[in-house]
Amino acid sequence: MMSDYLSKLLNLVRTGVTAHKGRPLALVILLWLSLNSLVSEWPLVNKPAFVGVLEQFSGSTFQTGQRLLFDGYQRNSPRIPESQPVTIVAIDEPSLAQVGQWPWPRNRMAELIDKINALHPLAIGLDIYMSEPDQTSPDKVAGNLPPGSQALAAALKALPSHETILAKSLQNAPTILGAAGFDHAAMTTADDMLTAPITQHGSDARKFVKHFDQVLSSLPQLQQAAHGQALLSVALEQGVVRRLPLVMSLGDKLVPGLAMEMLRLGTQSEAIEILSDENGVKQVGLADLAVPTQRGGEIWLHFAKAKSTVDRYVSALDILNGKVDPDRFEGKLILLGLTGAGLNDMRTTALGELVPGIEIQAQVIEAIFDGKLLQRPLWLKWAETGFLLAFGLLLIWYVPRTESKLATFLRTVPRAGMPIGMALNTAILTGGFLVFKQYGFLVDAASIFIVSSATMSSLLASAMLEIDRKNKAQQAQAQLVKEEEAYEAGRKAGLESQSARMV
Image (cartoon, rainbow, N blue to C red; front, side):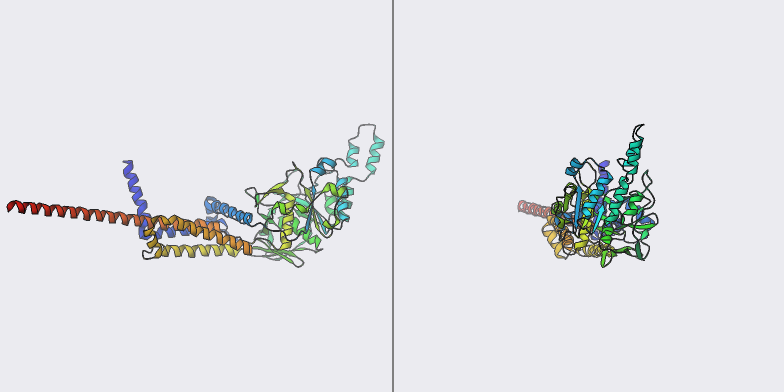
C-alpha cells in the first residue's frame, strides 16, 4: 500500500515538474525566490506587513549568503593602505607591565596626553571611558585615611584632584573623548552628553540612523574640558564588524562617531553636515569632504590586513619614556586605546582577523582618506532584482526549447546539465568579484546565484525528465517493433512449414 502511495506521489511530482516543459514551476520558483531576496534587504523605507513576515522565514538565508560572499570579496582583495593619517598609541602589555594594571591613575593619563600634545598632532581621540572618579585621587585617598590622620587628609585635599589635572590636559590638547551607546539605563549611564553641532540638510536623519537612549560617557568635568565627544559603538553582524556608523542619535539629538569627530577637529570645522532624503542618509561630510553612506548613516568598511597596519602602533610606554619619532605624530590623527591582553576590546573583521577595537576606528579614517570605501547604494538592490527577473525569464524561455542548441546538446550528453549549471554560477560569482575589485561596489552575486541556480535546476530537471521519458518511450517502441518483427518472422516460418507439409 505504501509503495502505491509513493509511486503516485512520484508520478505527481514528475507531472508537475515536466508540465509545459517545466516553465510554470520555474516561473513560480523565480518569482518566489526573487521576492525573498528583495525582502532580505528591502530598499524602501516603509515596509508592508508581508515583508516582516517573509523576513522571519527566509530573509536570513539570503543575508547570510550575502555577508559570506562580501567577506570573500575582501579576503581575496583586501584594501592596500595608501596613506597613514592615523597613529595609534597603544596601552599594550609592556605599558601595563611597567606602569601598572588598568585603569591607570588620571594624572598618569594627563602626563601621557601632555607628551602626545607636545608632538603637535591634529587631534587626539580617546577610546576610553572615564565615567567614575579616580579612586587614587588625593581627595579620595584622604577620605579613606584612618582616624587621627586629619593633617595628612587636609594636605591631600588641598592638592588638585586627578580629574582636575586631566581636565587641564584635555583642554590644552585637541582631544576627543569616546563614549558608548546603550539601549537601557545602567548605574553609570546618562541620557545626554556634550557634542559638537551636526547640521542637517533634507529629511530628518534621526529616523534612519542607529538610535541609543543612554550613553556611557566620561565625567562632566572631563566632557567640558575636551574639544569633542563621539560614540564608539560598532555594528556586529554574527560577531563580525562589517559596517560602522558615522553618525548616530542619542535621545533626540544626532551625535557623531569617532572617525567623523576626529576629522572635524583635525580640519577645525565648525560642524558635521548630513544630507538625507526620504529614503535615508545619503552622505556625511565636513569642509570639502563628503562621504557617501548607507541609508542608516553607516559605511561598508573595506578592511586592510592587520600586517599592513602594524607600523601605525606606538607603545604608550615609549611615549612616557620619550622614545618616539616626532614625525609619527606631527600633523597626524592620534587614537589612544587599549590593546593589552585581557582587556576584552577585540573585534573580528570581515577578513576573519581579530584586531583591537581602536584599529577599526583607524581603518575607517584611513579608508576615508584614501577614498576606498565600499558602496552598496539603494539602486543596486533594484538593479539586482531586475537582472534576476530578466535573466530568469530568459532561461525559462530558452532552456525548454526543443530546437535549441542546449536541448540538442543535453540530448546528446545527458550528464552535461550539472557542469553547465556550475559554469553559469561561476560566471555570476566571478562577475560580482570583478565589479567589487574594479569599482568597490558590493554586488549580491550570492542571491543571484541562489535564485538562478534554483530556476536553472528546475528547468534542467524538467528537461532531463522529459528526455528520460522520451528515451523510455523510444525503447518501449523499439521493443514493441522487435517483438512484432519476431512474431511476424515466426508466423512466416509457420506458414512456410505448413506449405511444405501440404506439398
